[in-house]
Image 1 (cartoon, rainbow, N blue to C red):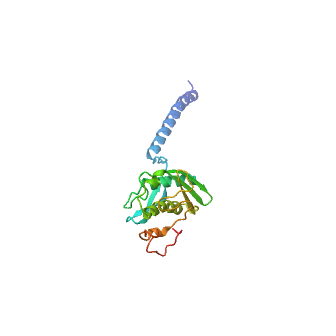
Image 2 (cartoon, rainbow, N blue to C red):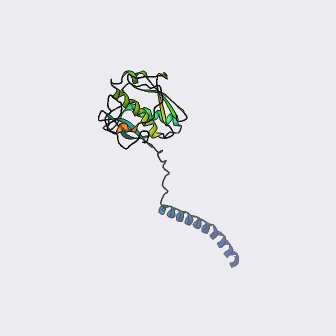
Image 3 (cartoon, rainbow, N blue to C red):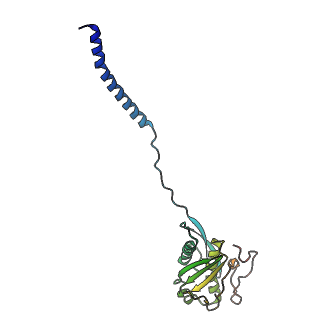
Amino acid sequence: MPSGRRKRINISLLIPFLVIALVFGLLIRQKYQASREVPPQPHLQQPSGVRTAVLFFVADGSRLGREARELEPCGETTACVKSLLDELSSGPVGDLDAALPEGAAFNAVRIEGDTATIDLNRNFADDLPSGSSAEMLAVYSIVDTVCANFPQIAKVKLTIEGAGEARLRHLDLAEPLTPDYTLESGPIAPDTGKAVPPTSQKKGNP
C-alpha cells in the first residue's frame, strides 16, 4: 500500500480519538472549576417589617403610663386603629396595669375626617370600677393611644353599643374628646378629674 494512503488512513482513525479525548478533557476541566466555585447563597425571604406603637395603661393605680408594643404591619387606617385597640384591651405586658375592665371589647371603628368614632360593648361601662378616676383613666387610655399613634386623628368619639349619647357614671361621652397627656404627670384628683400636679407637658401634645 502506498505510504501516502497509509498516512491518510492513520489520520482518519486518529481524529475520532482526538475528538473524544478533547471532549473528556473539557468535561473534567468544567467539573474541576465547578468544585472550586462557591455555591451562591439561597435567596431568603426577609420577614415583613413591624410597626412600633405606644399604648397607654395605668401606672401606680392613679395615672397613665406608656408601654411600647411591636405590632404586625397593616395598610388601611381603620383596620390599623382596630388592631391597636385590640392590643390595648389585651392588657399590658410590663409593670403597668390594665386601664380597661376585663370584659371590655371594641365593636367597631369609624374614621371621618380628623375624628375616630369607637364603639365599645356594654361591659366597658358596666364593669368599670366605681369612681371618676377609674373612668378618666379608662377613657383617656383609649383616646391618648389612638391620637398618639395616628397624628391625623385629633378627636375620639366613644359610643357604647352604638349609642351616640353615651354616659358613664361620672363622665359624659356625648362629645368627641381630644387627648390629654397631662394624665401621665400625676395622680388624678377625684373632685376635679384632672392630673395633679401639672407639668410643662400640654394637653393634646404627645
